[in-house]
Amino acid sequence: MPDPHPFAQPREAVIAVDSHHPLGRIDDDIYGHFLESAFFGNIEGGVLDEGSALAVDEPGLLQGVRSDVLDLVRDLEPGVIRWPGGNFTSAYHWEDAVGPRDERPTRLELAWGELETNRFGTDEFLAWCEQVGAPAYLAHSARDVDEAVRWVEYTNAHQDTALTRRRAANGRSEPWNVRYWGVGNEVYGPWQMGHRTAEQYAADALEHARFMRAVDPDIRLIGVGIPWNQEAWTRPLLTRAGRYLDYVSLHLYGASNHLWAGDDYDAMVAQSLYFEQEISTYSQLVTDLALEAGLDRPPALALDEWTMRHLEPTSWPAPQAGADGGVAPRETTPVADWPGGVRVNRWSPRTIGDAVFCAGVFHAIHRTAGSAAPVAMANPVNLVNANGLVVARPGGAFRSAIYHVWNLYRHHTGRTVLPCAVDGPARSANVRQGDQRSGRGEQTAVPMTVPFVDACATRADDGTVRLAVINRHRDEAIRVRPVIDGSADGPRQAHLRCLGGDLDGVNTVNDLTQPDAVTVRDHGQVDADGGGWLLPPHSITVLTLERA
Image 1 (cartoon, rainbow, N blue to C red):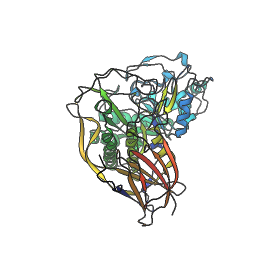
Image 2: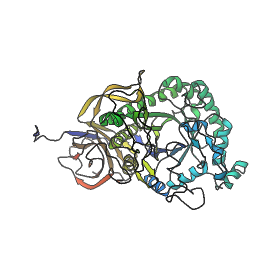
Image 3: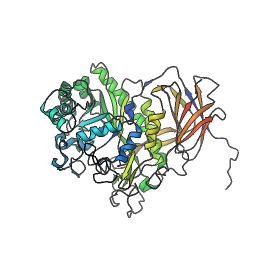
Image 4: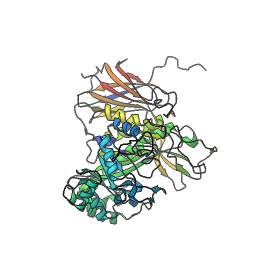
């Protein structure tokens, strides 16, 4: 069938940037990460793979660590890495996992129903963080003040004590100087050991924070925030413990149905708007409640769990890890309507749809710069395996599609955020509210306007303006025309790095046989055409603009 508009020009989006009135700076820790023990190959089979020919063989704290995984993570120059969980945290005892590995107890693990061997513990994690160049974030259950205090003493104290001597005997004479500490994880939920009310947690958080700070006054503490009933939970927390907290956490999850319902790209990429709405709402609430509580400043937000979940029917056989990096072959049956039950497929590979969604979340985070309670830390679920950035299998490791989003934004955007407004094409849609469910178990959605082009402008330390631009449209290239400080004479040249635009389909993934099917293409210096650049569909592009 002939094209009905053979001479149609591509649609255009004008991006207005104000380089004179920066919003504020973003923290490198928004490019942080997350590891959870006993969780679908995060640690054993991912970070740690004892006996593998790909693992470090030399004796020491890194013995058994996968060297290929370590190299891929090091290349990211990651922000802060959170461990040991997650839900795993609530029943974890750190002393089980220090000292000689062969003498550590194996425990029944109560969050994920696995066995925890404790062969990867505090010293191994902190040594691994040093090797990849990342700050460490240790999350405690907040069920036992003395245990939390002694963990801080073991890692950070410099005095001669029984615990610091024990640390030295375990291979580390100098303090680890762990800066970030979580005071509990999702303790509002009945799925947690140590679940409690808002008032109980506020009192517990105060006591934990006071005495952990008594050991090391320089640590930074993350209190448990909540994604629902936010005022009732957060008011007592800030009133009682707010003066000790540097962050409150917020956990948000998107949801994709493409595994069973077919193409879900448009619904996936739109959910960054839901994230932005939730982040903005909680940021303002935390700011207001901190003022009400008489705090000198509100805590920042730590989005220390977030991702896109790939859902599938529980009637299907449970997914297993595939040798190529995806899901192992299995028999599945078509689903005509909403399934009676769904679960997260932890082995489902990341697509370019996931990547476009993740870039949209980064734009939402960037736009909180200058807020009283900005997002100052973010840690996606997960860093290794379990839908993560790095995929490890016995035969090797590779970068998933979303690895390149972190690499692109971490290395090629600036840290000073500039005001940026987009005037371009959009669509109206019912935007899925992440993984929220109705009373009948179905996903909820609300009407919103979804721009096809989303942009974030930053200034790098070299003075250049870096323009990160998402084209959400699944199959239409859109011309973007930057207007800097109102000047009609726009940039004439830009260095373009693009992710996703060269792919035939939105469900393309990487695996061990094609590890670079989805990757960043560096186009070098590209001249403007008609005052702008034509950006391909389902793509993320960072333009380094020439200086005026």
